[in-house]
Length: 110
Image (tube, rainbow, N blue to C red):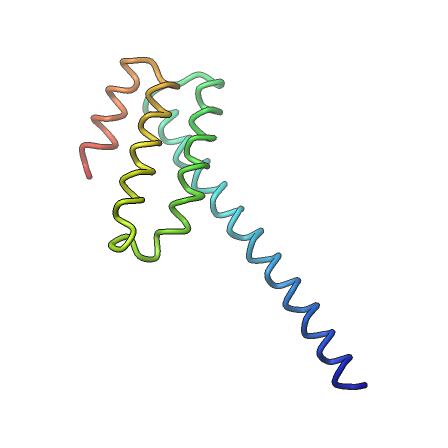
């Protein structure tokens, strides 16, 4: 009986710890996306609607990036794919002048 109770306690504690890790990952993703969106927003002088859309684009980017960032060499193709998706999404959000500045500032360094 004691072993059963111990096993149940252990299972419940594992359940709580995995939920905490998921929440932490979401917080990290949101924080990184917010930081990048704010930086792009200040640099390119976007309006509030554009800023929200830029944040959502970076949030989608960070979700995948966090998963593959441990081994970028092995995931190089997927890394390039998410960069392309981000650039395409930003080209739809930003006007032509803003997008050209974005490419010059953020993509020419890679």
